[in-house]
Amino acid sequence: MNAIARKFRIIGTTDLVTTCDCCGKADLKQTVELFDITGDDEVGPLYFGTTCAARAAAMQVRDMRRDVAAADRAREAAALAERAAAQEREMARWTAWLTEQTGGRYGDNVLAMTRALGGLAAAHAAYSAAR
Image 1 (spheres, helix red, strand yellow):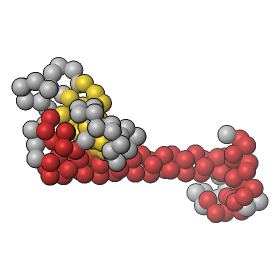
Image 2 (image 1 turned 180 degrees about the vertical axis):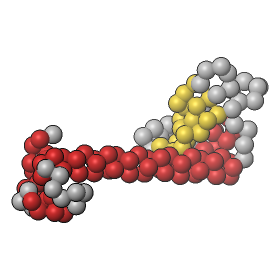
Image 3 (image 1 turned 120 degrees about the horizontal axis):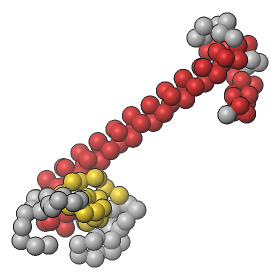
Image 4 (image 1 turned 180 degrees about the horizontal axis):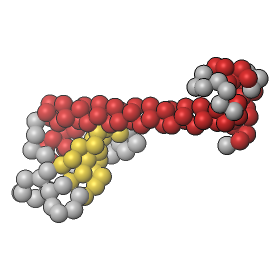
């Protein structure tokens, strides 16, 4: 690293890479995934141990750990939101398919529509086959 102040975008931790790109220490439990955003282009991802990440960013180790924990929480919240959105999309497809199969006679009553198609197992098997 050179003498200019470096800036990093912290992604979070990962256990997929266990060697520090800064010092080369291997067999770490996890590394901090980050991007160097000092210049015009982002460089990364880089994988540093917590101490090397803190040194590179000119931070205290405790502050790096705090920021990494916040990044991990944000990444988990984003993943949870995406899973919820995917479930909502799938439920909308399922309901639309049920409505189409039953001719809309049951409004949006999913239970009544599945019963009309022979129960949940039969309806789901037909839905899966139609996809």
